[in-house]
Amino acid sequence: MSDQQTMSSEAMAARKLLSAAAVHERSEQLFQHGLDGRLRHFTIHPEKLDACADEVVKTIRSSYPALDIPFHARWRHITAGGYDRWGAVMETAQWDDAAAMARAAFDLAIISVLLDAGAGSIWRYEEGRTGETFTRSEGLAVASFNMFAGGAFSSHPEDPFRVDEDVLLALTPEELAEGFQVGPDNPIVGHDGRISLLNRLGRVIATNPDIFGRHDDPRPGGLFDVIAATAVDGAIKATTILETLLAHLGAIWPGRISLGGINLGDTWRHPLCEAGDASNGLVPFHKLSQWLSYSLIEPLQWAGYTVIDIDGLTGLPEYRNGGLFLDSGVIALKDPADEKRSHTVDSTLVVEWRALTVALLDRIADPIRTKLGLSKSAFPLAKILEGGTWATGRRLAREKRADGSPPLTIISDGTVF
Image (cartoon, rainbow, N blue to C red):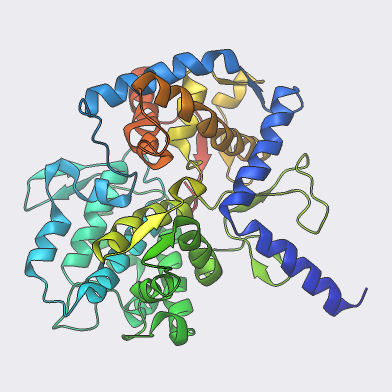
């Protein structure tokens, strides 16, 4: 086979990994290995899944007694403390049409999600105008919103509510640290990784104006026009949102695995994952991209589109959902000493943990729906995550550990967890 044919074959294998279906399939492979006792680091205890579902239902009934649960999305964190921050922007901004509004909402969601890797247990954000202090995901959301609303990402003085590629390219660690109130007494995990991610986003946008600048100056929100163009009778598939993000934002991810010249982003190696092509041994998760996909559903709806096939996306393999299954005993470490060690995101332990999380979120969904008396159409995975598994993972963490930290310590570069 020629070098060109090899590259083409590898590129075809790579593109198959850039989908939610591949996340499902590869995670399921590792789950089955776990049931057979072949994983290196975890055992699976399916008999405990029902009790775990009970814990999730307990959280849902406490937080949403009327079961009026919104989608799992960054917009929930942006309303931390009960303040409709985006609603205030909607009232004051002077957009020409729904598409202009949606581009701004895309701008905010993309920046905020990319800054949403774990902040650590020490970092705090004090919001002056509300007098409240926020931590973790809520703090990151409020901090990123306030930078956005203050025009920190805009190069158009007359239009602060936007994100421009030239600002992203030039953004410095000091500027981001100031916006996030980072300092010696208020450190944040993965600060340099966050700023590098935004700089690379600016570079990708600047070099692809045909994608990001179809109806405006190049900006992250230009992806709204790309995704809107896929609508059929006003309907857009959620899986199309993800595939668009993976196709056009893949180059922003740092030092990851490439195949056939294609950056695979949040994709990692595990020796038990098998495939009949060049993707053998590779396990994709696309956590931030899927989190962003969920977070772009509402802006598309606000612009008048219907988003379908939402359950085509997977549950998010992050430390709250993963912590839910570990803290409830559905999965267990083979070596208890691993609880005291720190683990890199590319370790087989973390890859196994994340894959089991995806597979178990699929399996816990139906027991939760049955206990609540709701159908799959009325209660998609996006609501189960919000209601839900993520919040229960956080609650169990607080009950088991004083600082509410996850059950495993992950060495993060600010671009995964």
